Image (cartoon, rainbow, N blue to C red; front, top):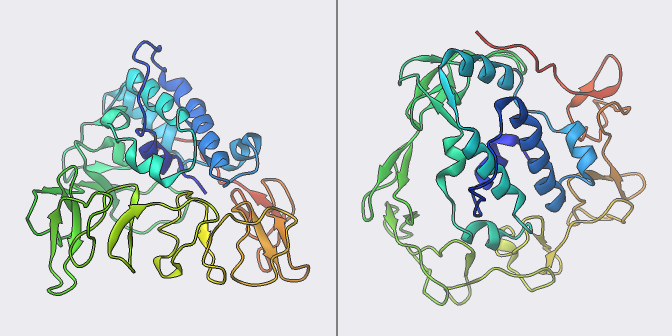
Length: 320
């Protein structure tokens, strides 16, 4: 299931129309949700846009908190970057791992919200934090509550050739952190292009995979192509495909109503395999009847044990 935060990271995989009008913050949530749901349907996480729109839920209190922060000056909102980010997300044409990996990430989505709270300061959401710091909760709290936290630096950029095994250490743009199979040491290295050797401490570039038989970086595999089950489907091009452990082929998930007689066959994300009928059945949507004990899991929200229906959590109210 696609969450808004993860999808906004993907939103930077394409160009943007600099002449498009800025999105006011009051319209950011519906525009972002629509773009996220479009990609979710494309990647077969939902059967239709309308179903996604009524099922996806942002972190409770997130938008009310941001609205309050923007009004007070704690967070600076850039409507032009918001438009560019959402336009970029809407331009993604397929759920191809190769497309998502090689289109070239841009920083536009990271410019939507600029926080002003320095490291060590109190926060509720990471957008309040200065730079790339994250808001880490200072205590455990129940889902749906306002979780107070502290801004903490989330990463340290590491240059080529330097060790990258520490917590929060991220290789410089264009490099990857690779562990040497002999020494166990991890260092930042340039990824290997198609046709290059990828054994030992050499990793393939984005949009490629390492063929373990030949030790060569190769292009990702289309649906129906022979794959290596030991790679956990990392060699299949479509993000929703799986390398079937029986046929060793990149295989799309089964649609609702399809037979799923054994554990190797996987239903689409919005369905589950019913053990009684041996078929993929649609997961209950928000408002539909559900069973918290026997399942299947709700497509949106969670199964309320009192009403026996799938329900979303309350999201209104700013954290303060």
